[in-house]
Length: 149
Image (cartoon, rainbow, N blue to C red):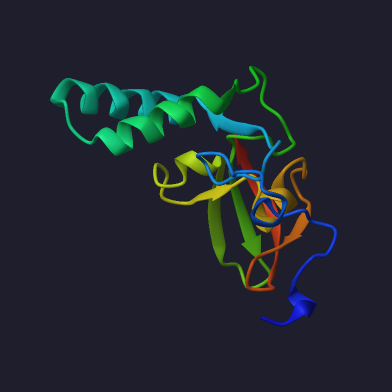
């Protein structure tokens, strides 16, 4: 790999000797998760324990659940994108896409889930209704709808 694609200011766990969390997040990163994501993980853990199966997955789920920080949605509707929100954007040609911003451990639970630490997730967080953002494919799109979780 070319050195041009490596950030020198990032102290990778592999180089520092520190271990990544069960979620794959860098050391020190907070493992945010929605309440519905945490419930799904707890339900899976309970099911595996009841069936006395999947010991490796049970250990993994226990580590993940021990590290999560559940984010409660705001009570009042917001015109800004927050963690757990479902956001609809429309590009200049009129095509719409919808994204739900979630934690790294719940990406498989939502059809259009994106991680809050992804470039798109970071672009959406704290953006406001009507703001323009850049999508992963380089298109720009306007935020046309924000739904709280």
